[in-house]
Amino acid sequence: MKATVYSIDGKVLKQIDLPIIFESPHREDLVKRAVLSEESRDYQPKGNYPLAGLETSARYRGRKEDFGSGKNKGIPHMPHEVLPGGQLGKVKRVPHAVKGRRAHPPKPQKKIVELINKKEHLRALASALACSADRDVVCARLHGDVGVSLPLVLESKFESLKKTKDVVKLLQALNLLKFVEKAKKNNTKSALFVVSNDMELKAAMNLPGVDVVSADKLKVKDLAPGTHPGRLTIFSENALPEIAKRFVL
Image 1 (cartoon, rainbow, N blue to C red):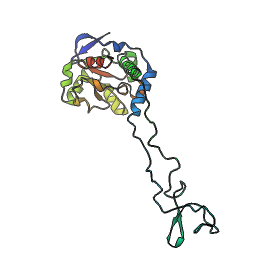
Image 2 (image 1 turned 90 degrees about the horizontal axis):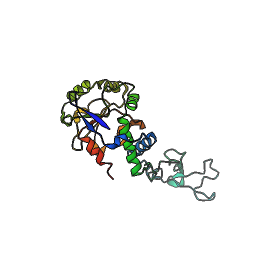
Image 3 (image 1 turned 135 degrees about the horizontal axis):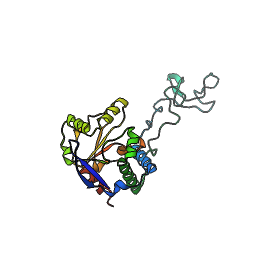
Image 4 (image 1 turned 90 degrees about the vertical axis):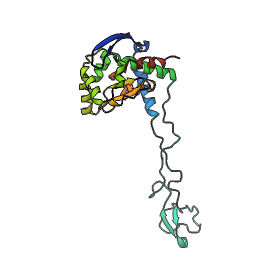
């Protein structure tokens, strides 16, 4: 499979051979599993304070004849606060009492991470990359036609852009700026820039819906936000060999 390399001026430079992973079969089921697994690793464990509702003098007197019991006093047989003189205060501790313990609080030891096999995750990543090179899938996600060859590969000089206006000019030359402007109106994801490992490309981070990720940190959820593959992805020429290295077992 070949790809067209474009210059920062939007002109065609040459043809290159793509890694074999861009020809992987489309597996939307694996992509969905991988995205949910990656997103679950960002969840923050929640739990209650171990002594919540217990930091009180309230205690329960179970025996009717116990000293200070509520027998024949017209009060519920619940844990009451201990007051001076053996008097009974407000009900505490129980879930239905004011400032009492919660009946079923969140457990911090709950398993919230969805696990996925390493090989299965790599297949999902390969499938997401293949979808980014499929014109039908990308155009269906964008609800519009892309006028460039996919996957979209730019010359390595692209990574040296320092200003946002230069990235805007590049998108205009490729006739892709309309998708970024559409993402601003709808508050959705737009383009994804994949660069080599030692670059950041901060100039593109200011654009609405645009994400920049290095090849060694590329995840399935970057290529398929919301578990739906086919995101408009722009690869740097230097990023392609770095992506291929991740599939060498």
